[in-house]
Length: 423
Image (cartoon, rainbow, N blue to C red; front, side):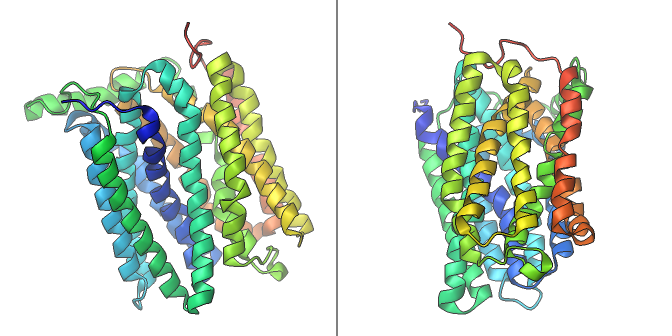
């Protein structure tokens, strides 16, 4: 018996569940390590390696497409993620906490990457083409809400716990236990409410030879797509500036003023990203989805590229001026988050456009793997670059890194009607 539920009943929580482990592994871990005295260059280098599972996930994405259902993978991975978060909490008080937590974060990254494959495939199976374009803004918005909640609300709570307990490791232990419980609850909820759109694919018995042939055939058919080289180069470079900015932004706000930072308290950084930043993000993401559904991806791609990249200038301002007025800092984050919410919508739709074909789940996983590679390599070098350049020149460098994607956009082949509402 198939469950029939409206997308609003499961889509927001599904993309919250997708974004939360990613931001915890890639950003919140860095803030935790910063509070425990790990240097910037070590934080960005080692946490940069945590991107690797998202880079190589196409190697096992066909397995998710072929074996079991996306629904099954989603629920199982959410339970594993919950167990991994609890394991991080247990490792924090130990004398070798850095090595132990990094090892668990790496396992968490593999579980989260597999979770992403299943969710993105489920999105394309459970929704009609029009629903996909209509909900892409909602989808990216709730994903980004998870990201901001992780580096906002969770960090703010961690800051409050640091002060109230007087024990930084204990504060972060409590944070990870809390999120572990949340993930177990999400797994139970999604087991109950997710629809069952698949018609047996992934559940029928097939020989090992057939599975292997389909596995390699998936990759071959993807790379035979017209214009795929330029499309993948665009995906790789679209977030080149952001890949470095996202690694340093929170560290910049926490760093001492004498070192070029803003010297904000942990809970203040959480407040900045977790309040007005969320509102701006939601507004930008919803507006972006509506805009694409009216005029199509091709019409909006370039304006949305400007929207996601130009607001990075706010960090140049913050680095040079080092304002003490919290509202000026908040305003800068609002501008950046609104632009990100609006501009990232086009990027999501472009990857969906590139993933069109028989094996949408695996194709989309390949696209997001290139996106992850574009985040991993620049992000790993960000700490070293910031140390060499200083915050002022580093953020100028970030702006320079936004240029290559604007060069490539003219060579892309996009259906003018893609993403538009069909009559």
